[in-house]
Image 1 (cartoon, protein in one colour):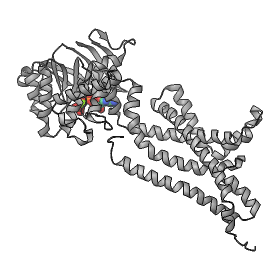
Image 2 (tube, rainbow over the protein chains, first blue to last red):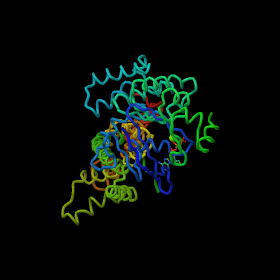
Image 3 (cartoon, chains in turn blue, brown):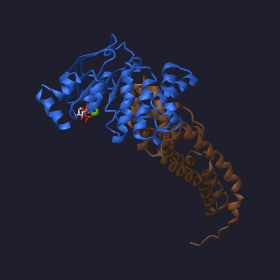
Image 4 (cartoon, rainbow over the protein chains, first blue to last red):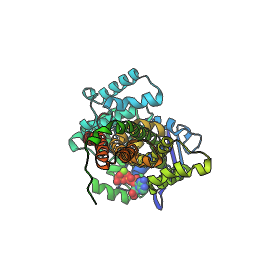
Length: 240
Length: 225
Ligand SMILES: Nc1ncnc2c1ncn2[C@@H]1O[C@H](COP(=O)(O)OP(=O)(O)OP(=O)(O)O)[C@@H](O)[C@H]1O
Ligand SMILES: [Mg+2]
């Protein structure tokens, strides 16, 4: 579904991605772990071209993203993204947050879009919050709205950047449950997260990233219980 | 110097004339600020977007207008330009162009600041959903920026309203010019100019109250519009 080959990304003099390659298959849940500053967010943001890679290639469903003929807005409709800080639109109700892009990007009628929004918000357990503004919600609720907003475009893959790291501990589970639900429904997901429980339960593969490279990858079991690379071992011993 | 007797009755006598001038003053300020909002939004967006050549043009415009006195621009348009184009504009036209361009330059900075004050994540979230740059600007960034822009824009309008008095130098019969004529006619500068000042104050006081109200309302948060 997504094929990444030899991806490089520099910010001025700073080399952040130093040739990473990955193949993310349909229905797979890939969890990316690694120390702060290792380039996890940058990798994720390159996948939907919020950052333009300096070198290498990303092929999504047969489309080479670096091709200048490609309409990146089209591609992004198929790749949902949930941000660490959620980035909800504070000047709109939750319903409008979810309904806006189906209406403006896909040309869906308002009634249909609102219905879709209500249904998605119901699925993430926010049926009673449809008329609230983001500022009136808890972090966990905001996160779930961000989920629903991305899902409203019916993406083929969902990208999550530390979806629970901005949350109070008691809210983490409600969010992970929504994500697990999504994984069980067969959604292809790339998740930057250090939630071991989540990775073990629904993750097909864990990638350990360090200093701009994919150092080690394998099943959650392999990586968490029996890491081979010393850098993986050192990192895991710190967070476990 | 012998102190002149102040005849306050003249303040009332000249009032109808001053009010006729006030109509021109308000017209000039309103048209100026409308032109300023249109120019300022376009120029502000260009300066945010940083498209090479347009950006440089926009920057030159803003710097030239802000770096020269409005009085000089005004007399240049009215008295100077005829030497090149061969005819003299109507005073109102010259004043309108000057105030529109000025208001545009200052407004563009307000717009630019407003847009840049919106978290980058808002644009990114909108783009990640498949919106184009312009859709993201229009539906997500500008409505939020607008709330922050409104109070400084109100202040800009107040300044503009007072600055229209400069148009008296190009013979436009706005309030200040009318005041000068009445002063010469009656020989009573003090009551006439006090009256003129009062009229300006009557217009600006409610406006600055309104701006303060907006600031409080907008400061309350981003909810709704
Ligand atoms: N827009 C940018 N401009 C310059 N440098 C950047 C930019 N974005 C990221 N970086 C740098 O790139 C490096 C990798 O950042 P990135 O956000 O990808 O790391 P990360 O693995 O997600 O870290 P964290 O776990 O802290 O989120 C960091 O050194 C960061 O300072
Ligand atoms: Mg990160």
